[in-house]
Image 1 (cartoon, rainbow, N blue to C red):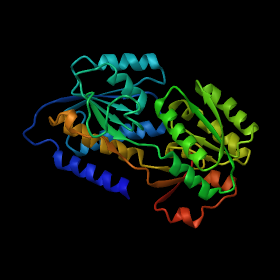
Image 2: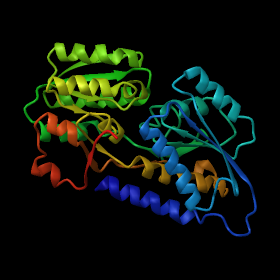
Image 3: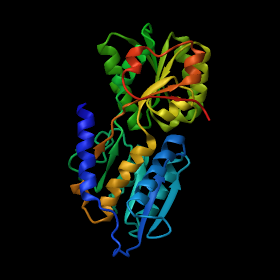
Length: 327
C-alpha cells in the first residue's frame, strides 16, 4: 500500500507539471531513444514512451523527431551511440534500462537524460538519491522486489528447499536483485546455488549445473544476458519438473512460471510524463525519479499446466492475475 501511495503522489506531481504542448508552441523537438537489446520488455517500454509523448502532444513527424537506436547487445556499439547523441542537437535522450543509462550518464552530458526502468538508480551510479537528481538524469525505476517474488513462488510451490540462481554479473541491476534474493533466502533458512554467466551462450550450461547440484526451483534475474537465452533455461527446468520464478512478465512469456510484474508499456508511459516535463522546461534536478511498483501476478499458463500446478487462493486474492504464453 505504501508503494502505491508513493506512486500516486509522484504521478500527481507529473500530471500537475505537464500540460502537454500548447497550440501556440511551434517548437520542433528532437529526442534520442537508446536500447541495449530489443527484447519484448524493452521494446514495449520504448513504445510506451512514444505513446505517452503522443498523448501529451509531442508527435513524431509533427513537432517531434525521434532518433531510435539499439546497440544489439554490443557494449562498444552502445558507447558509440551515446557519444553520437551527446552532440548538443538533442533536447533529451531517453535510455531504456540500466546499461544505456550508465553509458549516457557517464558522459557527463549537458543533454538531459530521462531513463526508463532502471531497477536501482542509486546503486547504478546515475543519481545520488531518487528525490534529488544530481547528474542531469531522472526517470522511472522498476525496483525488483526479489523477496516478494520469491514469496509468491513459495505460495505456489511451498515444498521447495534449494534455489538455483542464474544471472550475469555484468549488469548491476541483476547483481542488486540477486543480492536481495540471497539476503531473503538466508534470512528465511533456504539454501541456494548460484551460477553466473558472462554471455547468453553460458545460460544452458549454468542451468544444467544448478539442476545437477540439487536446485529444486530457479530464480532468474532481470538482465538482458540471461533474457537472451531464458527460453532454453525455462525449457530445461520445466522438463526437469522444476519451477522457475523471474523478474519480468516478458520472461514469463518466454517460459518461466511466474513473477510479480508491471506493464512494460505503462512504465514507458510514466517515463514519457517525466520527459514531457523536461521538454517543457522543468530542470531535471526538480523532477524526482518515480518508483513504479510491481503489482500484477504474471503466470505462464503452459508452464503451469506442464508442471501440474494450480494457483492457490492466496495468490488469486493478491489482485490482478494475468496468464501469459509465448506468442
